[in-house]
Length: 66
Image (cartoon, rainbow, N blue to C red):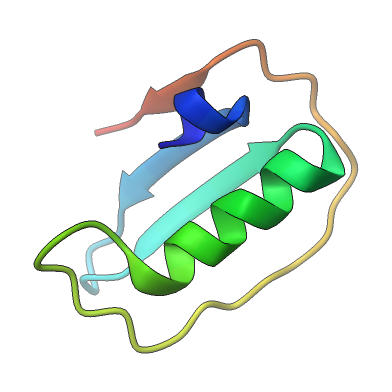
């Protein structure tokens, strides 16, 4: 979804079962990504989204980290 929206950054699964995402892009793209994250993909169980604003890092793509 991030690539479709034009958001760059990364996502990874955390040992506690949560998902960590860093994303950047236009305000509209990031807002759309946040809306999608609040629902998640099919079969996901999203209980909370914790948002933090940081300085842009200049990501050039969106990747999935192991």
